[in-house]
Image (cartoon, rainbow, N blue to C red; front, side, top):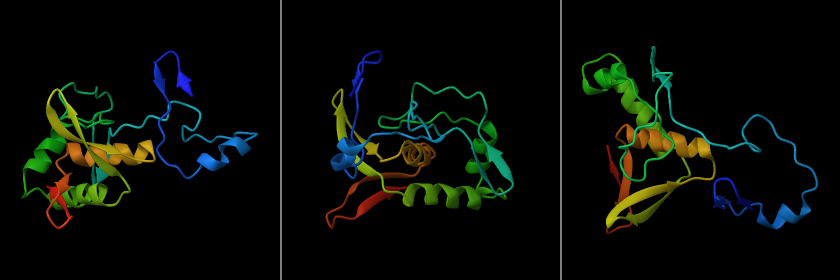
Length: 154
């Protein structure tokens, strides 16, 4: 499969269905984006009694290498997250940890312009957006240590 307009081909995110593709006769879709672009972005979230994220946020051009699917900004969030004494600080930290830990994303080392970085790969775009959102907010898997355990930056 190839998208002529964008010049990109399909990427396999999961090999579970490959053997069944030839047996497809009808496709039914719900509103999850199965037949559309299927692009998800981390834009807003709620935690505690606060909602964060501006409705009209635009993607920044200076995200760290490897961060994709994020379109988040909110000065109120920045203020709350920078203040460990704020009433919602612990809630924010717990949410970000949950987003960063509870997933099936695979981390891959990549090199671009002689700079090494980690790129996440997920079987669903919503999971990728959530994990990259956590990464953007400061929770990231870096690499494995000598014992094979993942090192986590918080």
